[in-house]
Image (cartoon, rainbow, N blue to C red):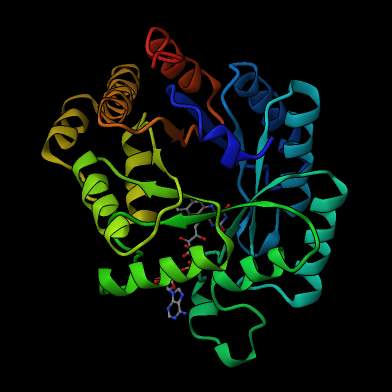
Length: 293
Ligand code: FAD
């Protein structure tokens, strides 16, 4: 099923993100974790794509198995920045052959080598280039794109970031998913600005339950997200007690989701990081709210 159709549902629904293994040895563990997450019946599961395509095979294997074995729609991520046209065309053919309907079209992060490379030689510079390929592929993919309530780390100007976002959506994005954020007001401000700029597609907020202090450090390195004092206090208080930190992090994420729903947002994507117990707890915390209109 297309995610653009799922997002029309006015009741609260939750989707989860999983990431594929880096090698065959870890495949069974990841498959088991994703099966447990799929068994929670989220509205869909997204499967990330390793930078540079290192896990492309696993992304497809996992997305296919979630859809075929558990009947849960999937969103297969695909990146383009370090890939040749031939590789991207081959990946798109793989997606078509596997019957994948939903694709998250991303540029991919720039590794230090890529940052210093001669960009004039690249086949793909931005996510919009991949979206155009997907649109021209002859398949009727439902296409997602990424957006950044606190602006993309490489951008210095939010107005320009939003202009590029608008171009990306106009090239063929059916919906957007946000980078993680820990202060819902940043999302509300961002939505106001993009709507004013004429971006009208559904925006799915991405929430990451932080379950240990190290995870927070890594997440901040990647996203540069602002951490409100209320969340910093939780980490200060519980950071050295793993069980307590896990409970507090899940409670904070649940609170963010409830606030989003109370403010008119019907669908939230949870960066569950292959942790079925975290995904299950979130679903349990929301059990009386899920499906409520
Ligand atoms: P783009 O939309 O291309 O934007 C990147 C930067 O370029 C922005 O600063 C933008 O303003 C600027 N820009 C865009 N167009 C132009 C233009 N025409 N001229 C000048 N500047 C322009 N990474 C992975 O490797 N695998 C994944 O599975 C993955 N999943 C993700 C899921 C989500 C929801 C998010 C938010 C990110 C994900 N990422 C993933 C990370 C993503 O690849 C990085 O954030 C990357 O740096 C940007 O990707 P993008 O698709 O947003 O790029």
